[in-house]
Every structure is written in structure tokens, then in C-alpha cells.
Image (tube, rainbow, N blue to C red; front, side, top):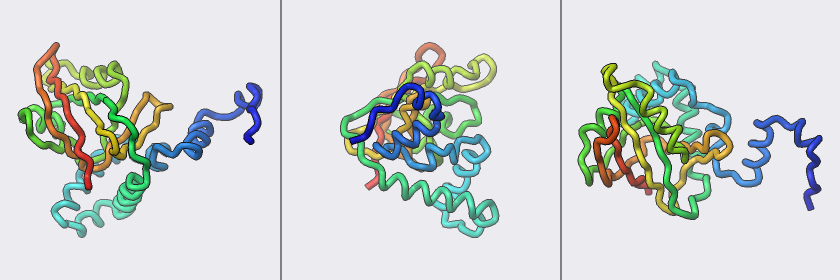
Length: 200
């Protein structure tokens, strides 16, 4: 039996250590996710570029960009496969903005019923509507930006990397596909309801 941890001992344990303890007891997030392996903007842009080159079969170009980063991506892809599936359908949110954002362009052109891949990288999503809304509104439309707010339905049995201890966030696998269930212009935002289609 695990003994009770006193408040004095608990106060000395760093938050990151608590995350590791919780993760070891209930591994619902990939190690790469918890370690913040792909949280930098620079890495995110390169990951998207490498993913597209991978789809084109251009591995020589990938090597010239960063073989090490590609190896880390493949490692995280394998970590996703080992995650336990979600037991119940879940709802998450994501906000993106910027007229040069490929995801914005894809969703602006999409119609209800379309199957889309708005992000070729590892997309961060959150259970907090407010957090997603703040990201979607980071640029105002009057400043030339485009703003998209997504409601994302995750079906039972899907495998996503969940870290409820940081912004109630989760990370989607690379090249995640979605069905567009609804799309409306509301309150200065393009609001899209998406349903995740897990890869087989």
C-alpha cells in the first residue's frame, strides 16, 4: 500500500515531478508531450515542412533540414500508438489566426462534409473554451488577420496525448484528419465544428 504523502513532503515536490508521478500511474500523455519536445514555434514550423516532404517521399530534403528532428517526430508517432484510447467521447477547442496560417486558409475554404487536415504537425487543443478563444482573437480582423475557432469532437477509442495539468491541453497526432460538421461566421470569428477521424 502506498503511504499517505504529508503536506510538508508534497510542498517540496516540484510541479513537473508531480506530472511525472501522475504520468507513471496513468500514462495518458506521450513523454515527448510532457517534455515539451515540440512546443517551440520554430520546431512547429519545421515539423509541418518535414511532414509535407515525407508525404512527397523527399527524404533527402528532410535529411538536409534536420534528421534529428525527424527522428524525434517518428519517436513521438510511436508514442501515440502506445497511448490508451479515450473511454468516452470528448470535446476540445482550438483557436488559430493569421492570414498566412495554412490551417486558417484550409478551414476558410472548407465546406460542411469536407474531410480536412488543417495541421500537418502536432496540433495543441484544449478543453478550455476561453483559452482557445483567446488564441483565435490574438489578431483582430481589422488588422488584416483571419480568425478561426474550432470545436473538436474526439470520438471514443481515439488516441490523443492528454496533459490535464497544463491548460487542460491535449495534442493531436501528426496529419490528423477531421470531418467538417458545421461552419458559421459569428462574432468576428469563423467557427467550425470538427469531428476527428482516427487513423486505422
